[in-house]
Image 1 (cartoon, rainbow, N blue to C red):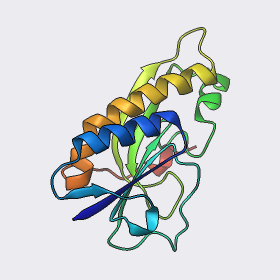
Image 2 (image 1 turned 90 degrees about the horizontal axis):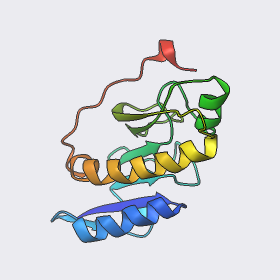
Image 3 (image 1 turned 135 degrees about the horizontal axis):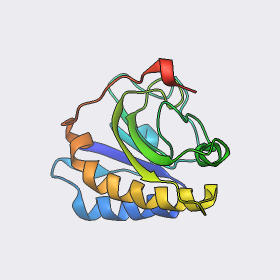
Image 4 (image 1 turned 45 degrees about the horizontal axis):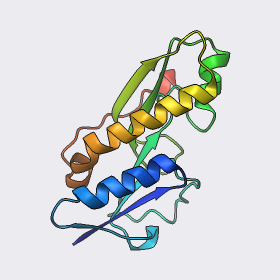
Length: 156
């Protein structure tokens, strides 16, 4: 049985966990902590994994609130507003040893409206994260996805 842990500290993550419980493919089970899992999925998790925590055979994924590699780290939507950008987004990527650096699986973008704030963009991103989680859940569990290296020349 392949053990899956979904790390979160936000309501959208709890929605993802509940959905996963009801839609878990055969051969997989949810576990309650990172140490026991074979697959880790971060849905707005409140802590960074240390290099020593990630085991070599463990697969780790993150739903990042921002377009990678442009907006690594936190505060992505504040930078979207400050830079007067036209698009915001969410990135699903593999977790590697560096923060928000792993291979990109999927990016979903949405327009920044004239009245958008960092807060409203984050709220919209949570909806996209939930939809992306449901859409990509089976693929990331079974490894049936393609991932591409991030373009470091455009990273901010």
